[in-house]
Amino acid sequence: MSPSLNPILDVIIIGSGIGGLVTATQLAAKGAQVLVLESYLIPGGSSGYFERQGYRFDVGASMIFGFGEKGTTNLLTRALDAVNVTQETITDPVQIHYHLPNKLNIKVERAYNKFLQHLIAYFPHEEIGIRRFYDECWKVFNCLNSIDLLSLEEPRYLLRTFLQHPLACLGLVKYLPQNVGDVARRYIKDIQLLKFIDIECYCWSVVKADMTPMINAGMVFADRHYGGVNYPQGGVGQIAQKLVEGLEKAGGQIKYQARVTKILIEKGKAVGVQLAGGQVYHAKRIVSNATRWDTFTKLLPVGKIPANEKKWQQTYKKSPSFLSLHIGVAAAVLPRSTECHHIILEDWENMTAPAGTLFVSIPTLLDPELAPEGYHIIHAFTPQLIDDWREMSASEYEAKKEAAAWQIIDRLEKIFPGLDAGLDYLEVGTPRTHQRFLGREDGTYGPIPRRKLPGLLKMPFNRTAIPGLYCVGDSTFPGQGLNAVAFSGFACAHRITVDLGLSNGKCQHLD
Figure 1 (tube, rainbow, N blue to C red):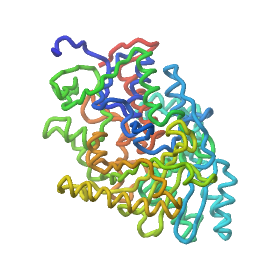
Figure 2: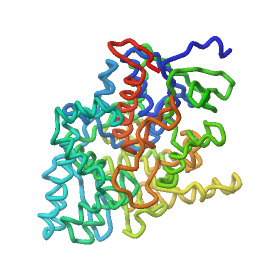
Figure 3: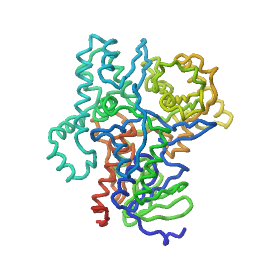
Figure 4: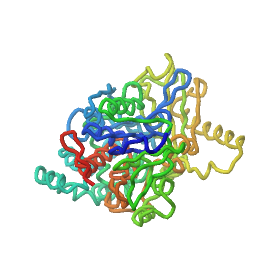
């Protein structure tokens, strides 16, 4: 396709992860001409799916926040509503069933008081501290849940929000530089209980409480009891499919197998992209839903990395990737009381080590249609470093995959006896798999701090130092998680809406 045949669009979005799709749909709904370029065959990235022998597997985690029906933190519901599409969901009554050292066996019930009762039963001497700590998380959430979550880079929004909700804004300013560990230690002294707070954070932030921002924890620890964990009927991949449906209804476009290899810079400004096949597209604004590592070291010309991005890379590092097992198993293996999500850890010292914490999702307990009749899906995954999977022959790679898979199955057998005998299907993904199919450098889950930081104060917003270029997704405020990247998408779209002068569905192109 000749570059001259392509009109100048309003916005090009590189990648169709949830952050990118929320940005796209929000802008399309306001009348912008939007094009999403996706390198793979389907949308969603880490929130995609694949099908094998009658099973529909989620690529990533299936513990989904953001589908509530009230407040302002139900960002997935709001994103779909904006483009007039809906997604049926199935309520999960238990967020996580923890299987932890020292026979600490705790279910995080959706009913808040039930969860507190379970936890206090193990730590009766810390009842006051437990209540005070989680109440503090609710204070954060209540502040967030009383305001529209848009771009913190937009002064008029900040002023308007402060005038409308001064106490909520002051509360968020208070918590913005704080981390969970500092808050927990104000109220809790028991070492085992503090380790439990660590795993509560680690299971979604992949860092312990001392490194986890209080803003993020307030969202997760309260919303699981407020909006709850709700699984999309048909699988997690349906979220991206529905957003694409809404995008196209609103006049936006998405192209698949369209791998962007270069962001075009003219006179210091981002003006377009070039694809692997040579096609060129131009737009007034470019949004990268790739990680910041991929964006600034692979898509931009050598030597064009801004100083603040180099500083960001000195502040944050890539979290490990995962070794993932996608398992089909006879339904009889799972007891009737089995919950959908589990965290397995045998030794506190191994919490953050490769192959230490084991994450387990069994989405067919909520949506049986994802598997053949009489079978369940088990998705088990544990952190792994890509360096441990490099420089080996094909046969060595396959042997290592098989050995690692059976180590995980042995651990699962202790929770679900008979799993080995009931196996119907097994597929193993490594960090190399994640890097190849998700287009994420080293297959990383996302950025984590290199050292303890003041909460979220160091996390960048959507605009970059290169005019016309924005980032969206887990490399931007407020970080990792499906609802968090949806927040990033709302914020990015809002900032671009202002920058382009979008009003009443018409684009005024303010450059």
